[in-house]
Length: 167
Picture: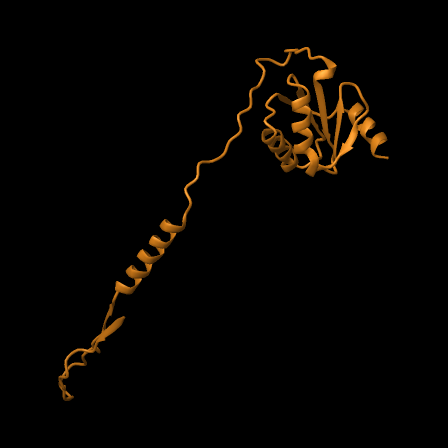
């Protein structure tokens, strides 16, 4: 790995008239071969174990301006509410919101989508709810093959209605 060059085995006799000679430095030689072997081993390991995957993105279509209004029949509107405690509620049209378990959402979406082909889902999230909850609900919609949905913030009136339902 490493070696040292001690120099020749010459003997120098000391005499009074000779100048003092500095001690001869030993040369150090480091063998870099094992380091290169380890570097290539690590490089090969990471190249063979890395999974190349494209980043997953979600396409969102935004309206051209904020004043765009779309009229939808009440029977075709399903509103989903997610409160700050990650509880999920739904209402069809102007009905009172009803709680639903998160693990039953996919089946619920499939049933509603089969019952009404013109169904539009309005997702309302409390500003204090977790971001991953929004992503999970949208994933459930995608699994149910429902692609007509809109996202909106929860209003103060919505929060009051949900507090009455949850009590």
